[in-house]
Length: 331
Ligand SMILES: Nc1ncnc2c1ncn2[C@@H]1O[C@H](COP(=O)(O)OP(=O)(O)O)[C@@H](O)[C@H]1O
Ligand SMILES: [Mg+2]
Image 1 (cartoon, helix red, strand yellow):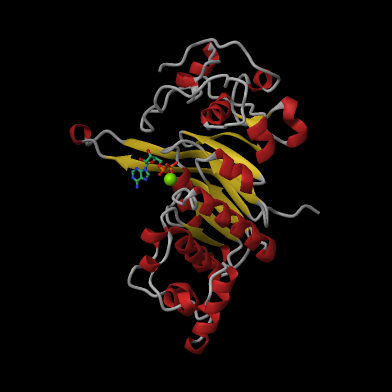
Image 2: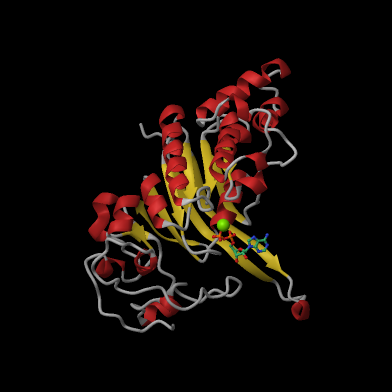
């Protein structure tokens, strides 16, 4: 018997209409997410990486139900109200916590709204949540601005935990924190997962952070998944030129060899994506067919044991070693 994944994202697109003053009749869309399929197992951590603007937040908001897919489905193979399926931790803890509410109210608002506790149980519930994220009782009656960034993010995590969701979506949840605090929060998230068994969808532009926390990883470029597989394999031996470029662009003081190439040029406009492979305008390995035909996301032969897929016409050659560049990307 095979168990169903917790979450299945099936061919999801989220397009936003854009109004262009001189072209009111022309229907143009920002294709923020464009045909994404993903699966996430119970208790697993899936990392999503990609440059700013590639659609990570829109995908996250769609999973949580804050955005409606233009096409495709988000399916949870669990019964229960939405709040018990998924909660979100946001990038900016200060902006996402109500400045006029004390911590005790922030943490228990959802529990009271859904009748999961009575008013007599508020203090005990809040204390339990604070203990879970390594904070003590004197935080209860304080307000968000009285805490450091790291502590505020602990409160944001405790708020997400309150409703015992099967999945927590963390959208750049550690990006605004100091490096030392970042590791503490990542360790806390790992700890909480070991204790409570929830899955994470962990969005970050920092590859090191994703590698630290994720079991699997999906790399996004212009609203689409270009490579996915076990985080360790994809980041150590990328098969898609975009993943190679992301890795090469990440500073790594221990990397001795010269990066094969560094990502150059700008991301094309998401209202008017390039035909064929969307990455072809920036890819040093581009061949004619990349300009006209869209490569499907398919298993990479040399990484079949690890179940890595990539959407590149040259993935099987690239996975076997460096290739000579066919073009110099624009600087
Ligand atoms: N509500 C919206 N209306 C119009 N365009 C949007 C909206 N939200 C996001 N976008 C656009 O969709 C694209 C993806 O954005 P986003 O999901 O925030 O990317 P990321 O989180 O990867 O930086 C961007 O081009 C962004 O400008
Ligand atoms: Mg974002």
